[in-house]
Length: 78
Image (cartoon, rainbow, N blue to C red; front, side):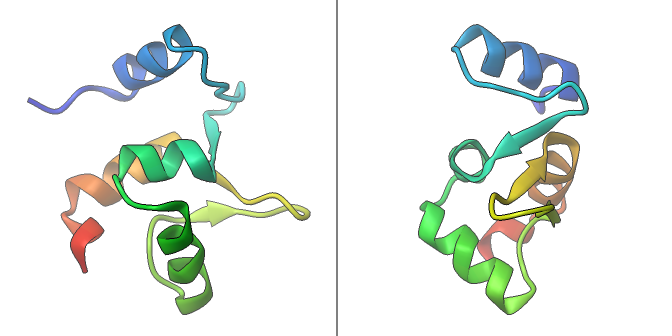
């Protein structure tokens, strides 16, 4: 049974992971959720694939809701 965004956020925070106030997570956390290696997320970003990300500077961020929606759509294995 899929968990809600709120449940996933609470579990991540309970495990000591940082989730920003607007729901962004690091690529490491996103990779854990997909699940895939971080290198695959990086490759997908270069190819224009994978979950939507936000990169205001050097560090890429993933919105938790976008990662969960992408997983729900079954995109993680394409």
